[in-house]
Length: 446
View 1: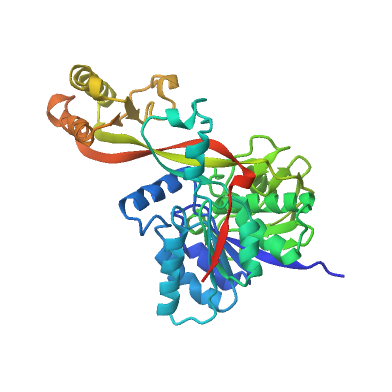
View 2: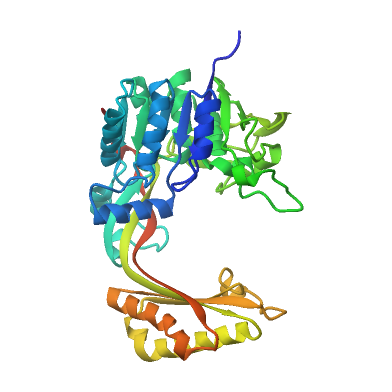
């Protein structure tokens, strides 16, 4: 008897991903589910900043476009799941409801998943922060958010209740894809091997174009065709948890064993223990096999019980950053940039040192990535860009420092040009843990 299978596509790999490839999947992929991964540490912190400035926002900046584009497909049978609720799932689902009513769609059943906000809990328990080794209460600045990575159980509940457009907050990336598998195949709560396979399949899909050639091309060694129209992946998964990962026939990019291997090890610290809220996957025996053009069979994963604790991202307001940039070109560009940096360093020591929390200087094109570990250039670069950024508790001081860089027009090396300056509030992100049972998720059906 033929195994039951479902077709799951990835609609985005992060919050600012292009929408066109997801539309192609919705139109041509014959999908049952399309899942949107919209979050990372950076994008969640940006969402928290938006919510701080306006409590009615804090969700994916593309939400309106996503709703207008994909609700008509949902009305025809496609199911959408995403963590595009970010810092504010309730506001997000409210906005989607408004758009569905505006479009006069009648087959939309919305669900919001909340409960990942655990700020009050961790303020009470004062857990240790991973990055500092100190209690939460010892962090500098003001704690404004705390979101736990949560799993697929609430997604399954929403699907069991008939939802076809599901929005959550910090739903873990693989969980977006695992939820439909548990719902469709009715896996038992303790069926850890099949859940482990589902987690692995979700991990292959979650980063979108990473597995179809994005972040893989390295000519002439690894050539990816048609990067300008890179397609998103989808998978045909059977009830065992194994599946074939594909791209559409006319999509750009490629799906090979090599691209799958690259994604399988991405952000995995221990292949024997890939920890997610839903279980711990074991990738050591996973096999990938090319079974057709742009089709790869992923199988033989396994898993074990869920962790006792969940990771929490803590957002802390830590002042302001004032930064500026200035370009130099032609003979002596590097030397003039270094002279300008020395000018800034001396002005910093004389005027700003006591008001600064952190200072940084980069010469882009020489040392902006590896810093002091970068070698001196063997040949003088023809053009470089000097950047300096200072973090301070005062917005006014941050603005002054950004202006100091602009003053290099007059006080620095000759030929400075192309100034850019920026001042922004800093929301730093830290990590801690919370007991699994202390996170209570809620599904609100709309």
